[in-house]
Length: 197
Image (cartoon, rainbow, N blue to C red; front, side, top):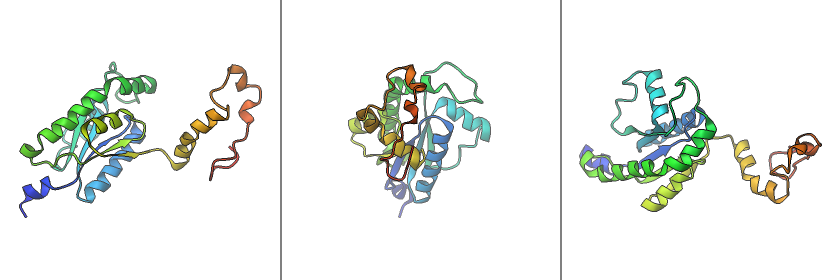
């Protein structure tokens, strides 16, 4: 079979992590596993974190694999220390306000240039569970999406309890007195596998 035809027939996953180190590391490991199973991978990162990759590995560290490519999105934040994690609150706000359009543009570009570049069209998006804008892009473009929670199973189980905590009146705290009046000693005992929190 012609290698150009074989490349165009590959599954093409666009992987996008929440732009902080632990999430990037987990998503990159998952992307490498998929690549090992013959997926074409496009890994989307912020420009800030992409520059950190290049700084740590050298300017050519991300070159070399035609079926594993990197794309970037501007984070729309002011310059910050390249050796430190960006301000999480500002980054989270920027994600909600500024990432949908550039992410959609990347997906459109990948699908538009698929024929001329001999790359396969995007067949799925694998998004960090904290990136709601990816669901909008997937829906608008008709691309299947999978969600990868890069946190531990225990953290995920905890996050999944937020609605129930709210329904039981345990969150949000009513006022600052709840920090000192013993309320924080309330035992939560209904989460399977997580006793006596």
